[in-house]
Length: 339
Image (cartoon, rainbow, N blue to C red; front, side):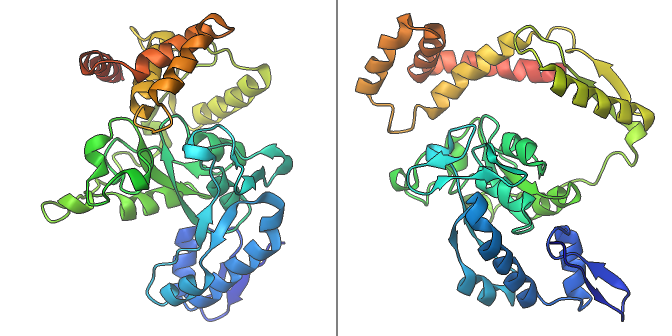
């Protein structure tokens, strides 16, 4: 149930269940609610609703209440699939995360616990990592907001792969990472920029050398933007229901004066881009200790099964030379120039 806290001194109302992080900050500064009260309120909602969706797997209530006085509030850890490598959120240790809108459906993955928590009003901001949609997919499924930032804009320290136990934590993981990113997730779009401004910057090993300053908005109205969209591609056809929803969104953008264009830019063949990405993805995850020589040999047995060509291309990516990786990376970067 939605609860609104109001204080007559400022005439300000704040919804502690589904309000934005920016609104929460203003409410705390205005004395509408204290940070401690808000933390206790969030934990109360988690205790009431988490059992149904299994978004949180650990809670830091005592630590959070102590940190609330200092402005840093870490509520707990949300659920992910094994290795943060699935389009849904399930693992044998902590179970399945359900979608708050319909608990019979998935919250998506891999940051499904985070997106489900946001949708259910169990916090204000979340961190996600994204290599193949782990921020974007659960945000889509749960009706929340997520942003995949540019590579290396946010430090990758503590993310996987590799597993934390496999790496000296003094080593800058950014130097090992050429595809995955860490990014903000929130219930309100306006909070994405707020969170990004906090988490963006140099990795710890480089913080003494430079600082990052994000530029302001380059445009001030929707009418200044150009938007491209694709709903018909033979490589990845779109279901009619989804196509209809996209069409409605495009119609709204047009009504606001946005310059909208359908189709890929000249020179872009999506199936070629996917093939390049898929091979680079396989090369990237090859650092996971699960891909031993014996496992790769077992995967080769699937070459002659249904979808065997996909398995073949994945194994080729797992075992590619640095020379081939460089060639594919150049292809990836050339594709970006088109946009």
